[in-house]
Image (cartoon, rainbow, N blue to C red; front, side, top):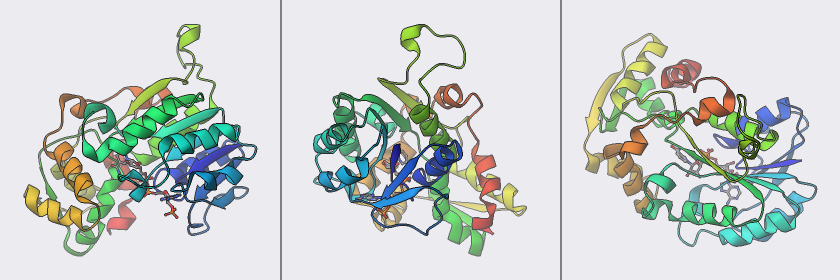
Length: 295
Ligand SMILES: NC(=O)c1ccc[n+]([C@@H]2O[C@H](COP(=O)([O-])OP(=O)(O)OC[C@H]3O[C@@H](n4cnc5c(N)ncnc54)[C@H](OP(=O)(O)O)[C@@H]3O)[C@@H](O)[C@H]2O)c1
């Protein structure tokens, strides 16, 4: 049985769907049951990851755990110590742990905004399980923040209009996580025996090409069949918007990546294609699939 935390969110929901469609027994975990649209046969279990012990009853009979931390769990003092959570999982019989982390834990090893995720990576690596860490770039779906202004004024307002980053489709993240949780790691092509496992691996998951906010606005326009204007915000203006939905350290960390990406953050990683055996999905394709939210 596979336990999926964050199961009602952007990545967890399609992951639960992919695992259930593949015939896996899945327990979906979040604090609230969500909108009740989990696939037939998937058991939902309420648990608060801020309390390590609350995972215990969920883990009965679990072989694998997909671990996703969000919201206050990523802030200093945000609930259970990473080690306590991992100890609870391994004591509960979990052999494989897949952590959804972030590319920035590797590219910005001293950033305050990713300190908790770094601590979770360390705890996962020291857990004694067959661990795998997934480090995604920014999600295509962050563009949902523009849905209302695109719907009402056909305008996107964002900072750093011409800084291009290889954002990733959360559907690809879900499929990559499902592949890692289900497969024994046998590569699709070649590889020596000791390379044939996802255990002990860290994958960087990006989209297929860098795309700038201005290009994202244009892609939304193409998906809608109507032009979408782009208005560039200053860093300060963008900071003001971000502070309404996230704490200061996270807002500053986000703006640093968007405005002054490192060379590694600009690069396309081959790992989605390696894991899925097909190219990563573009922002334009994501925009076409999600156009209804912007109409
Ligand atoms: N967005 C990006 O560009 C980006 C880039 C790189 C990495 N990431 C990483 O992606 C993760 C966020 O993934 P997402 O977008 O799929 O999240 P999301 O859509 O915000 O969903 C969060 C999920 O976690 C559950 N949850 C939240 N707090 C919980 C708690 N205390 N106990 C148990 N469940 C809890 C939520 O349900 P309830 O609220 O009902 O509990 C929900 O199912 C973060 O770790 C972030 O660092 C994001």
